[in-house]
Image (cartoon, rainbow, N blue to C red; front, side):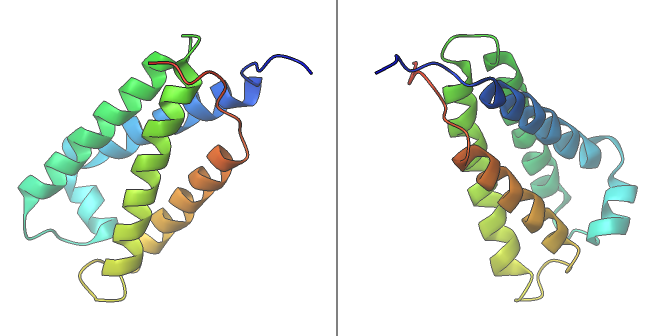
Length: 127
């Protein structure tokens, strides 16, 4: 029996998902008009700004964790938590008509991140 090691694909998923979260979080912060053109006008801009900031924070934490021995495991926890939460919001609020159907594109991406993480062993449990 071999010892557990972090598969290289775990680091790749961590970096890719971290970058995705940073870019997705920055979009409404830097250009709310184009974000609202795609995803619809927001009643509470502060909520969109908060969500964007949290996504940037999650993405930066994922990216910073990649080189550490425990990094992919840490990035996986952040990534799965973020993706499951956003997928849930998309799947609950699109049918209710609170957010535009274009959020189903985000739902597909979040489902893809969940799938990628579930197919990737995270390695060491780390801190």
